[in-house]
Length: 200
Image (cartoon, rainbow, N blue to C red; front, top):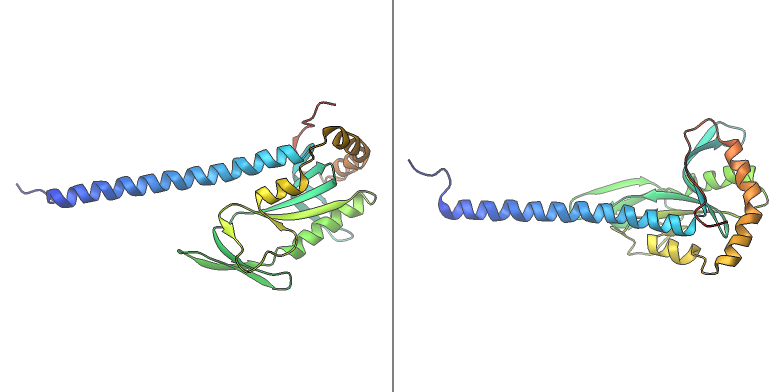
């Protein structure tokens, strides 16, 4: 009885399967590391955090905020964009495009939605700085310029990390009453909160 695969083809097939398995494992590892890296950065810059926050949107309905952090600079809204490839987008473009070796797709400019979230939070905490960032994970690259409010994970860390812990604690205490207003304004949503991480 003859082999279904000649010996040379069988060896080649085993090598190809092993290589594909290795590449897939590396891809999974990179995806997990990107997520873990982001979590570590949010833990460092955020002294308190609410995930999955639902609050009123001005006079019309409600709006969801994926991640709201209490930082030493005020409140920070983070919208995470998990795309792989080269991103072409600008402040005024209606749609942004992602191109990689395997795919090309467009998505609506995410900045107007971020502005809406910032405005909704500012309606509740009028006396506290409120900022927002669109955080693209490590496998996204802007080769034609980076729009305002867009950051990588490392850029987010560099911008919001507070090295002076004593000064940070003083600022956080001033923001806490306003942070409590956000919690009270939550519209019965499931709040996945990460409590104060610093020693008080």
